[in-house]
Image (tube, rainbow, N blue to C red; front, side):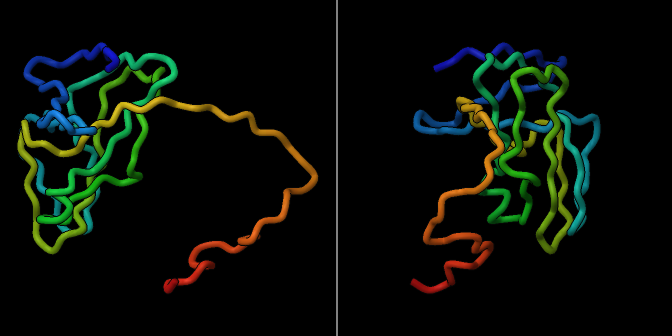
Length: 146
């Protein structure tokens, strides 16, 4: 367990874990008026929250499975990353991949936050790479069937 200081605008809800075993804490919309997402539309939805994430950690922004399965509402660039040095208000990038308009109201659970450790790599330039079974095979190169 790690403590993450959170500044919440007046009325914004702090993220909350809904069950003992939940990895993601639900985060809610903090908006003055309902927002409608028409099919195919992308909108940034404010949360009213900003964080002081400890160095060596990130908060990943992930979709809520119920919104995705029932309504086709998901987060773009999922998982999104909130870096430890960002102090601004967090907004969630939502898209409506469903077939119906979807309305978001203040207080609706729109995403989940997962706190995760960060491992940073050291990138070095080399003349060549070791061979592998896959080689340079890209998307779909291993086939669909086993």
